Length: 155
Image (cartoon, rainbow, N blue to C red; front, side, top):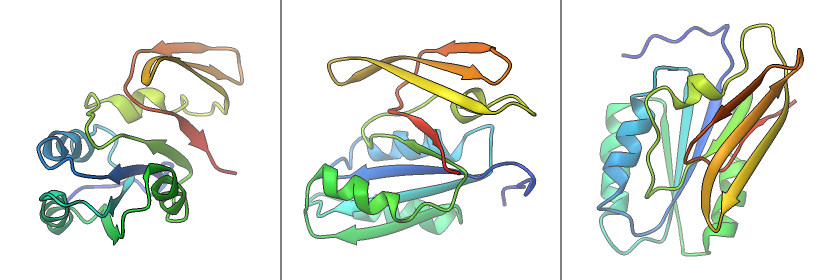
């Protein structure tokens, strides 16, 4: 069982899934293995025809932070919108189901204690994220290379 500090912000990780059976275990291992444990991991299977749904069920049975849903194929845009409806967290991170993140990814992106996240810039080269710059209230800047789309704070 994962020990979670309820005084820390909850991060909702949203993962649209479509026919990624071969890649999904690495993605999910990288999410459940995060050094920051206070997570809600939400996956929606967008009508996959491979074994993606079985992989999702297996991981959800092993980790209570994982929520899984299935829908008829509607495309990634509609799936992302449905994922946004499931948010319970203070912050939101989209991760593509064929990608993975480093074990300290979430911890690195979260603001330092006592700081407010003011700005998040994402620079892309085609479809890949190259760099994320975080500017905190006091002017600190963190520049990280990552495979995420964005980390957003919901107020």
